[in-house]
Every structure is written in C-alpha cells, then in structure tokens.
Image (cartoon, rainbow, N blue to C red; front, side, top):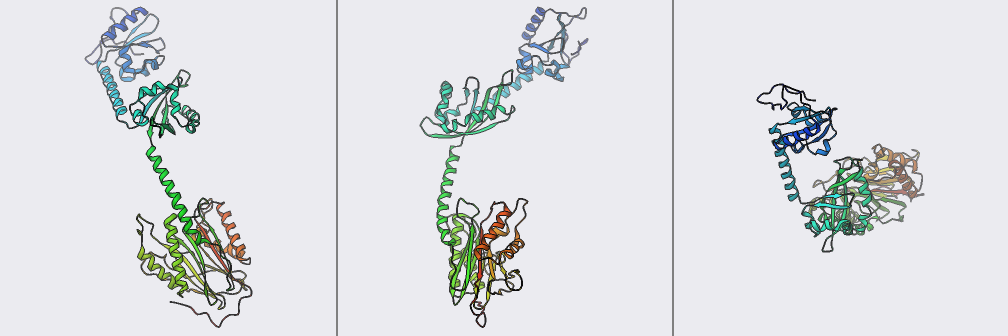
Amino acid sequence: MPARPTSSGPDRPVAITAPSRPALLTAADGDAVSRAAGLLGSAVLRVDGAGRVVDLNGPAAILVGDAAAVVGRDAERVLGDHLWRGADSLDTADGGRLVLLRDGTALQEAETARDASERLARALLVTIPDIVYLFDIAAGRNMWFNREVAEVTGYTASEMRAMGRGVNGLVHPDDLARWPAFVAERDALPDGAFAAFEYRVRHRDGRWRWLSARETVFARDADGRPTQAFGVAQDVTAQKEAERTLAERAEHQGRIAEALQRPLLQALASNETGLRVHTVYRPASDEALVGGDFFDVVDLGAGRTALVVGDVMGKGLQAAAHTAQAKFMLRTLLLEGHAPPAALAHLNGYLYASGPGVASEPETPPFVAAAVAVVDVEAGAVQFAVAGAEPPLVARLDGSGGAVEPVACGGLPLGVLPDWEQDGPDVVALGPGDLVALYTDGITEARNAAGDLFGVGRMRSALGGACRLPPDAVGAALVDRIRAWTDGVRHDDTCLLVAQVAHPAPAPRSSYVVRHG
C-alpha cells in the first residue's frame, strides 16, 4: 500500500488528510469522497485491507481500463509504479483505504491515448477492404459489421444483423457442414490466435462469392467459455476463379500433351535382326502420362538397329512438343544413314537455332539429353553417341561372368551450344547374349529416404545380377530394385531400354563399318 504523504512539493499532489488527526472514514464517507473527487476530475480506487481493488470511479476507470477487469486485483499492480508512487490514501473504518490519484497529466494522457486509439480503430474499419464483424456466440447472431459487408454480399449491415441465425442460409451447404469443426478449432485456440476457414456465401444477385475468414475469441465469460468472436473475411472469389481457369487450362494442355506423347511411348516387339528389345516407362506422376522422356527403336536395314533414349527439359505440353520434334527428327537422320554422332550433331544444330520463345508464350529452352546406339548384330559391334545422358551400359555373358561396362564416350546436352561433338571411343564389340541398356536420369537420380542417389554404380550392379534373364525380365528386375530403393516414391520420369543379342547370333560379317557422316 502507498504510504500516507506527510509533505507536498510542486510535483506531488497535496494530501487531503488533516495532520491533526488520522482519517478513519465510514463507508458512507468513502462514497462521498469518491463522488466529490470524481466531480473534481480525480481518480479514486477503493481498496480492501489486503490491497485488492473493491471499486473505482469514472476517472479511475479511464486510467486503468475496464473496471470489471481490475476489481479484485492487487491495486499496486493495477496502477503501475508511476501512478502508485504519486497516489494519496485515506484509511477507512473497515480496514481498507481510498487511493486518490490526482495526477491530471496522467489522466489527460490516458484520455488522449484512448481518443487516438478510437480514431485509429474507426479509420481502419472504414478503410479496410475486407468484412470485419463481431459475432455473439451465445445468441448465434452477428452483433456488428463494417460497411464492406454490403459490397461483398449485397446486404447492408443492418440487414445482415436482422437475419440473426438465418444468415446461415446464405452459406453453401457443403461449407456449412464443415462449420462446427472450424468453430471447435477457433474456441480451443488461446486468445489472440486465429483460425482460418474458406467458404461460399450467396450474394443477393444469386451468385456464389468465396470468402476467406480468420476468427479469434474476443470475449469469454467468468468460466472461460467464449462468448464473442471477432473476425475478418476477405473476398477471394477472383482468386478462386483464376485458380479454376488455370486448372482447366492445365487439364486441357495435359490431354493434348498426353495425345502427343502416347505415340512416342509405344511398346515395341523384337525385330528380325536378331535383337530382342524391351522398354520401360514410368511417369513421375500416375495422374498423367506427360513427361519429357522418350525412346525409339528403328530398323535401319542390313541387320542394323538404332536404339534411342532421350530426356527433354520440362513437363507438359511444351515438353511433349519438343519431345516429338526431337524423336522424329532423330529417327529421320538415322534412317538417312547418319551415324549416331553425326545424327546428334545435326539435331543439336536445329535445336540451338530454334531456341526458346517459338510459341506465343515463353517456353522452356529445348535442351535434350540423348543416348543413341546403332547395333549391328552380324558384325558383332555397336556404335554409341551420348549427349548429356547417363552412360549406356553393356553387360557381357562371355567368360567375364556378367561384367557390366559403362560406355566412355559423351558430349554436352543438345541445344546448348551451336556445335556439338563427343569425346571417347564410341564403338564396342557385342556378342551373343550381351545386353545394351540405355536409361534416363530418373533411374540414377532416384533417392531413398536418406536422400542417397541410386546412382550408376547400383544400376551396374542391378544389371549385372539380372543380365542372364530375358530383356523383359531384366527390365522388371531393375524396376523392382528402384522401387525398393525409393519406397515406391517417384520424383522424375523413369525410362529404360534393354536390348539383347539373340542366341545364336547370325554369322558375323568380316568387319563392322563405322559410319561418321
């Protein structure tokens, strides 16, 4: 409790207690003093013997805030150090005190701050472009709206208040069914925390408007149960319509892209050149068969077969269009008699010249990673060309016991630079039962739960363990290994082509002619 002052100074209020006798006021006297002090603009709190606030007059309520919220609390904590030290007190007959706060400056500052806060609140409520409302939870009706509610719903604030619980009839039935769960979430949150909810409201003109609301508990009863909720609702109808338009456009483009890509992923049967071929393609998502991976098998005649696996940057319609261009142009170049390195060099020139921005909207650059192998079964050899792709693998079934060798040649992806060439030896011998595997980085870059890559090393090991099987069984075994590694989760397209020289191989010709043009 503050001590009774014995002197006064220019910066201290004057004590009203006469020094000739102690002040022992009855309850009636205390009421009279409190009323008189209020008329003089002084703030008075009645405090019991334990130092708790019993009641307070109007000026005191301005200083300390909500009167009901401070009754029963410790007076010194309520007033704060700056007001408590400047207070005068009078003892009352019931063992309590009247605490007089005659600091006019503090009272004026409190009133000024309150007025400024009210002006700011009014300005915010007028200028904010969202619906602001106060909801009476017990009565189930809205107590107050700002004027923005008329702009969004077509109903004025008074019309909305008059609807009472009938306002629920404006909410879409599907969203109204989710409302109890939202209310339970809101009421369980601590004061000041917001719960979010999106729902549709029928405008006066009959159209549905999407609102994104955030609500918090504004008031509680003595038992802590929520009695009022404060909320802000933003009209997000335009955003929802834009999202729906984009989704419909993406779905339309996806159907076109899938139609373009299906011919690129046709299953292929063995040809008559003594080469058995099996292909595997798994898109990154099961929802759509749209990606940038492709493969091809081309019978070049004279016992020669071209194997192609490629990966075009991007997904969707653009990737499908670039994939079709790359696949069929490469097929044409190979059928014209160009060797694998020369075919990729010609394709590179076209892709670099075309560049991005061919369509009416910005495009992903048509960069292509590709691996090409031309197998001559009769000559017992294969020539490779690799442009930024994973290294092709050759598994041998001779005395090496199933050794798997990566092909050493390679160059940059296609479309990056105006000229393309590769380094390293590109011709490898191939015998009966040997396997050639071409694949995209969706296999080697597959990650497990720890983030480790499957990698070329594990690909070689998996191929070596399965190379004595038929090509289709080899493909299935590799897919099983990758699925086990990633726990069935795919983040990229998976494309694999396995070709095996049949048993017995045709009698070899005298030599394999390496083509360079």
